[in-house]
View (cartoon, rainbow, N blue to C red):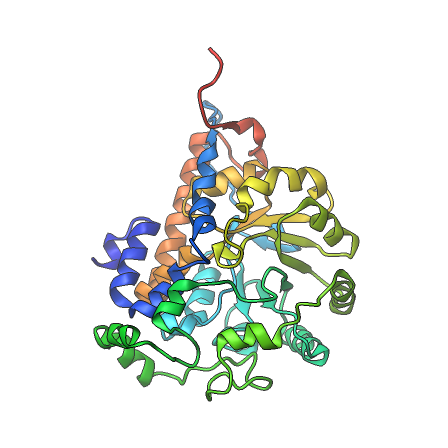
Length: 386
């Protein structure tokens, strides 16, 4: 299979699987425990059907949205994800360049492999910085100061990962940073030699957001230990309120799933919340964000930007989320598999396909702007009244 033969999420996933060593593919593809929530995330969109209108004059379609003060040409953005240069040697540079080409936002993780400053200097598109709450409060303040000085547009605190999820695929292969692979895992690297050649012939792998604070690359700290030893499970709403006040700008919480928590986010001054279960990688058996979307929009949607991610694979998924009241939708694996398959060209092809799907589907729905999408366009799946 070649890039030109990739026409949807599943095609990109197949190509990535062919090109990545097994442990790295499974790091992207895997989720927690029995992966029930991972499967439910995408299946949840099937619980509603779209009801199109016709004869509405849809020659021109406007797909732009504004979220947390950022004007985006598309109602989707590239969510921050860790370790991108493991998937392709250009990593975040490839994703940021593709996002800029399509006029949308991209995220940088505190476990990212390219620095905030390098990305901000090179790519002129809205940038969000995702970080975790550490036991070292001084480290938290230093990370926020650095993001402010780099010109980051939106601060995103992940609140569903105070400890790592039980990702059994990684346990079987021995995947970690630094690598501590099982024999089976090492064999998978041996049969993907091109990945290894690219890994050793390009810039040394590092985690620049953490290099000054944690020795991740020299063997002193693995990703698992980072989550279990450095992140602070005692974090409270009071802690986050202090951070929101200190940042004094666009600040969102990623991983909110209950109405009660959504209301608290409004009360402490957040400008956005992202309904997310971390792509099914944390608490297995948790509810899908799409299933929670309507009740949270009803509770706080007039006071805060409600966004969602997890499981989005199609333009119709995006339209359903927007119809329920989401302001935008985050993409994760949707762009990571194309990144692994073909770098920037892969991410551009995936975003181009998403753009085409959204535009085509809006026309088929009889909508010329995102603001025209509403719950009138949706019905619960199943037989209607006779």
